[in-house]
Image 1 (cartoon, rainbow, N blue to C red):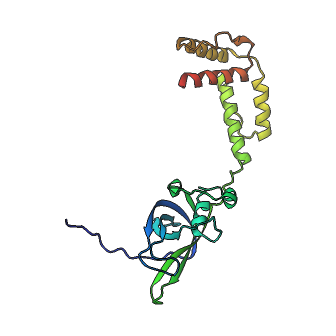
Image 2: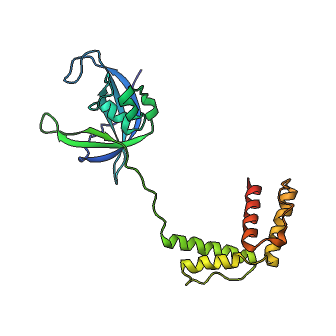
Image 3: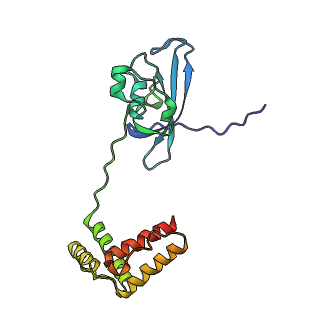
Length: 238
């Protein structure tokens, strides 16, 4: 059976830095000879990582770890399990743990990759030397500008619902927008709003949704009527 080989791919070592690693695959390997860190017959894990390289294409790297007999703090196997979040480290320290690398497939962590000369002192290589969980992400604080834009959009919706022409003045402050929403929203229904809500209730009734039939539309404020209109619309779209 013939095998087709692609062109040679030149290896380019990555600069020393921290990179995001995503576990692509893993497999068991059996040592065929004694080495500095293991003995012939030892079972090791080969980890296949996708490395996210800033401003460049992703690359792949492999690393091998021994399987420790205990939840040892110096074990890279343990470090990887913690970094990927597939083990409760505090509980494992006290009770031990059963770790399934399959649970880490597709998950990500940080890895420190170090670029260094190989033993020939001519060829550059790199190696993953440490693993850590991804930094916790903090939800961005919404700016006042974003909130003002949402308030303006809501006020415009309320005005259109009430049948008032035009848009909110462009120079309204965030507080002024809130005040306008409260003032207009507390007003009784306009003929336009009453018509829109009544038609929406009739449409819901036609679709077999009868829970709004008993609503006294005339007693609603503009704000309550708009909320009801949107609630019925959501039921109809479901």
